[in-house]
Image 1 (cartoon, rainbow, N blue to C red):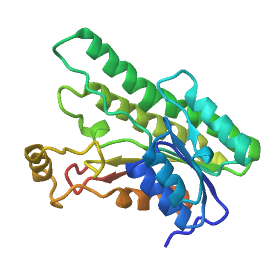
Image 2 (image 1 turned 180 degrees about the vertical axis):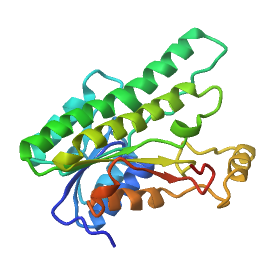
Image 3 (image 1 turned 90 degrees about the vertical axis):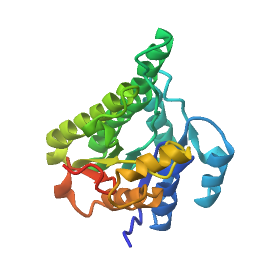
Image 4 (image 1 turned 135 degrees about the vertical axis):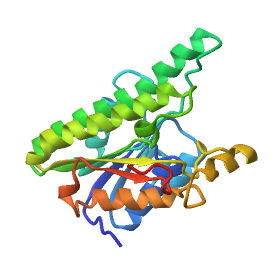
Length: 251
């Protein structure tokens, strides 16, 4: 099992799904985890309990708000003094419909860019500054999506574009900062058993039909990859994107 003893790991979107699984796994591996959620909820409190924390220990920031990513890192550092690794997992699946009310189109693009691009970009900028100040390097794992490579449904261009942006910024900073031991990785899941996965029986069957493995991924599978990357076990993989999609999209 990957060990993360003495590491402090900030995980965004930790209230459920991949983020919650990553928080539990990193904690079990010995890390001190800093949980982020957009707002208080029963699920956030449950994850807190699972990693030995109270709801008051969770850092709440709404990523639709300007500079929320910067505030998150600032508050995390104020509480814990340092951060060794950051997992940018929080995301919003926002439709950008080609027909209908233009307000829905505007909202889809604005929310996707704010939550999926600007907030993690701000977090990365703050993380790089912190890692440089410490002089000890650090790790950032950005959770993107299969959609960032192959696109998505015609009504979901904003989501696909935002995840493509995450992949591009990950590669850019990996290339530019590797010499400072600041490592960047991306993970591009396909369907994962979270609330984003198709729940309708027919839609689920259609989604699974294109997955050679025959099922959607479990959050714990993605969390295992996150924990491995956070460990720093393979620095030479910096800049890489790890596909977790049951061979539904093979590059």
